[in-house]
Image 1 (cartoon, helix red, strand yellow):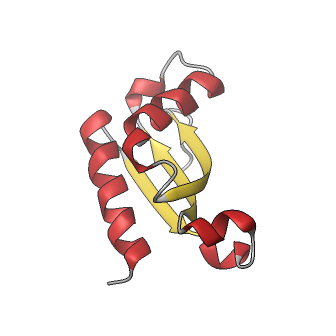
Image 2 (spheres, rainbow, N blue to C red; image 1 turned 90 degrees about the horizontal axis):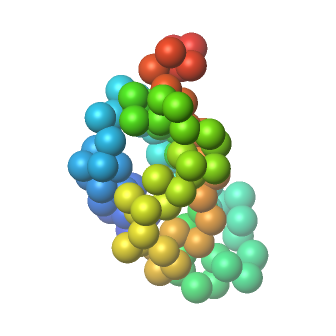
Length: 94
């Protein structure tokens, strides 16, 4: 298991602890940023798609803040950049 796979497992555990996750996908996109200054620090680039009922009534900024709070311990050592797609179950198409 690679270091980023281990990191993803920890991210998933923290997100599942913070939210009632209906769907969760975390993709390691670090390879797309090879040579980027942030990549040199060891932190990865990840794309997160999450569906959770807690996002109901929250705007996009509030959803992102909640996710950042859940993953706070991983910044900046494990996560250098994070793309977030956060939906409620009624907004999710799959």
